[in-house]
Length: 469
Image (tube, rainbow, N blue to C red):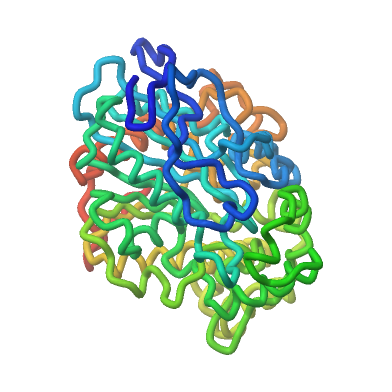
C-alpha cells in the first residue's frame, strides 16, 4: 500500500467468511518527544522501503486501568502503556476489494488518561466485512494531551484527532475509502472529543457525519478550571507551570502524577466539574461544544440507560449508597435538593444507589448529549438499554456496555466470565447477549455512515428516540 508518507505492508484476515485487509500502527503524525510532547502534531517524515503494519504498535503513556473493581475492563482499556515513540498511529481495516467505500474513524474513550487502538474491542473487521473502511486512532493523553500550559497550544489530544482526520483525507483513498464520506465516531471521552471536533474551525470539511456514544456537549473544562489542574500538577512535579518547565520531565512522572490529581475540587462560581471528579483532564474551551455553532454534519447521538452503574456497581457502591451519597452526587452537578427531587419523581421506586447512578449518568452524559442534540437540530437519537448480567446481575445497561454491540464483538472471550463486561455466560448460551441486537445496532451504524439515516427519524416533538434493548 502506497501512502503520502511511504509504503506499508498489511495482512489479509477473514471475518465471517469475508476477507478483509488490516494495517496496524500506521503513523499519522511524527512521534511527540521531549518538548515536542507539548507542540502541535506535525506530519511524519517519509520513510524508504516498505514499513510493516502487521503488529500492534505502542500507545500513549498512561496508567494501567484494566482492573475496575469487580470488572475486567482490559477489552476496553487495553493492557496499559505499550512503550514506544511512534504512538500517534492509526489502525485500518478495509474490504479486500474496496473502491470509494464510506469511511468511519473511531476515537476511543478512557477518561482522557487511558486507552488505545490496541484494546481488543476495537477490532474493525466487522465494519470492513460490511463494506466500510474503519480507522481507529491513538492520541496524546493526560499531561501531554490535555494539561493546559502557558507556552503550549491547548487541547493537543484534540489536535491529534484533527491531524488523524487530515491523514485520512490524504491517504484513505489508497485503502479504498472515500475521503469525502467520513464519519467520525467515538465513545465516552472519545465521544466528547467528537463533539469538540464538530465545533473546531480547524476540522471544517474533514467530517461529513458524526456519532457521539455516551459523550457530552458540555464536557469541556473552563480555562480557570484547567489552570487549577496545571498549578497542582506543577507543584506535584516540582517544576514551573509552563511548557518550558514541563519539557524535561520524563513520561514516567507524567503517568505517576495522574492519581495525585484525582479528587481536585474543580467547581468554580461559573462552572461545575464536567467530569464529576472522575478525571482532571479533558478539552479546555471558553465555550462548550454544545454552545458553539455545529459543523454541517449528520449527527447520531445517544446514551446508555444506566450509565452511572459502571462507577458504582463494580466497587460495590450501588448497594451501600446512602441518602447522603445521593445528595453529595447531586450537589456536584447542581442544586442538590431540586435535582434529587426531580430524579426521585422520575424514579419513584429507586433505592439510594439506583438514584445516585441516575444522577451521575445524567450529569456525565445525559444532559450534555441532550444539549448537543438540541444544538444540532436534526440529530438521530438512541438509547441503549440491554442489561448486562455482569457483577451479580447488577451492572445493567452501564457505560461502555454498548461497545461490543456496535463493533459486533459479542464473541470476544475476554468479555465473558466472572469478571467480564457481558457477564458469565458462554457465547453460545441463548440466555447471553443477543446476537440479533448486535447485528441490528452494528447495521444501524453502518447505514448511518453510508447514508446519514440509521433507520429511524431524527428527534422531534413527537419522539424519534430509538431504543436498543
